Amino acid sequence: LLYQTPEVTKPRYVRVNTLKLDVENALCKLERQYMARKDDMVPDLLVLPPGTDLHDHPLVMNGSVFLQGKASSMVAVALRPKPGWEVLDACSAPGNKTVHLAALMKGQGKIIACELNKERVKRLEDTIKRSGATNVEVLHADFLNLNTKDPLYSKVRAILLDPSCSGSGTSADRLDHLLPSYTAGQAADVADTERVNKLAAFQRKALAHALSFPAVERVVYSTCSINQAENEDVIKSVLPLAASHGFQLATPFPQWPRRGFPVFEGSEHLLRTDPTIDMEGFFIALFVRKNVINGNQE
Ligand code: SAM
Image (cartoon, rainbow, N blue to C red; front, side, top):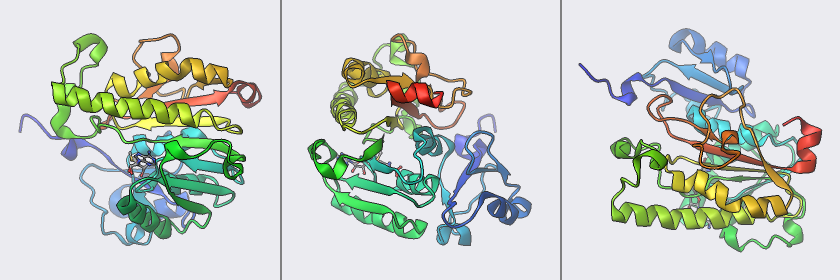
């Protein structure tokens, strides 16, 4: 074979659900049979050889580990929620990042998991149940309609915003989109461009909304898209509003080499994964309120 598909060559990851099992114990259970090892960046992530199939493994079935990729697992870690905080997951189903937040918060504090789509609310509830998290409140609502002045949200200190996106970083049939638009020009056909523009308009609104909650100190924005329009362009468009609320960009995982496309000053704070190297194209941006940055060594 001259060419191996990414499915065959990419390592598999499992995120240990530390609400149910600690990382050392998970490693013990998976080390010998599956040659699992700890990931060098995400503390609760284990790396397994390509092709490992754990989908019906007892640890997966009982929610002790979740099949979750590395880039996806970086998002909640980047938010760094503290146990006891109130955190809002704005677009949450099927809930992989929601229950990761719950684990990082050691089950303490409160997570409000907002989801618009009724069918997907069911999947969210299943995920929460499987994880054993007891501090998640599911909210079947449009995130854009949440009133930032409602006392219900007055203590929310962190928001994870992982909105609907084109998914161009994860679907194998869209490899024509690999070249960044700032070098390649818009290669997508008209329908694709329209779809991406619509998504980007929603993403901009949702991010602006997230930055408007009064007590929020940290906002993470993520997509599984490789399109500049859904990533750097969205961030750039909210910078003036973010600054007016005292937010600035911080650097999630500073040791990670792949950063945002250089389309505005500060884009080096942004994090990208590259589907040709990392097997998935993800994007992560982190906003932190200035006064908190100083006290927090961002
Ligand atoms: N964070 C999830 C995870 O890691 O499992 C994946 C989230 S998925 C990319 C985006 C979700 O946002 C979808 O379930 C979609 O139905 C939901 N959504 C879209 N528009 C929304 C809105 N206006 N308010 C709340 N949820 C929304």
